[in-house]
Length: 265
Image (cartoon, rainbow, N blue to C red; front, side, top):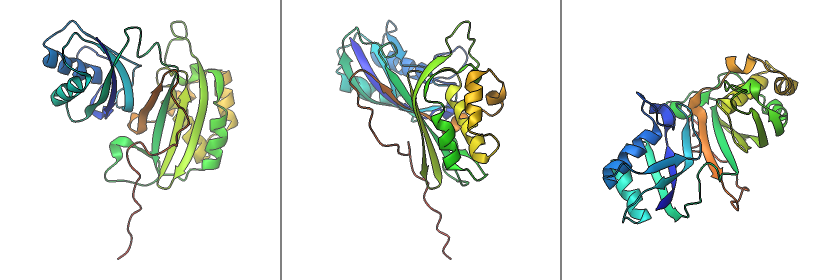
């Protein structure tokens, strides 16, 4: 039986999604939990894509091939009982065996949270930028990412082994008070690409780069973006889209809005 799983996780304690030797990963924890619940090892768990170390997910999608008499609801409940508190399966449904979590995905979106003030609670989920940020300049720069481009300057992936051409459908920048939210939606994403895009956008917002520099980086490989890569803490895999999924939804804080400090005495 093939199950489609919807999964949320805080990636702070993990070396990314994919199973690795000698490293704790999200996929590894779910694989262990399913094995304990089912008493089997002949199953396959396949995610829609990798997330890097420290990156979070609001709605990662995976498919699970598992021979079991359990209903999807029972699979979710039993597996969650075996998982650590920072990984949670939100739901499961039975799908045809032709469904593939990665190959059938038509687009993905990430949201990045930038904090504009120091916070005692949200450090694992934001990047605190101390300097003033010009949101209008960031939006000008963000618009230059839209379209099909070669993102070789924004990844460590080897272009001889992996295509660095990506269709970016939209990059939104929203001012949410003490949070600045950036959504990046595209066909797929390559290693470190989104974090380097965010790093460049923040440098534009700080006034250290011009919006035109985005176009220059897309046209000519450079090590600049590697030096200003945004930290993993603020990045969330927001959604994975499949044929027929709606794409018109508001940009909202993934976990919380930072409350305005009460300065009254």
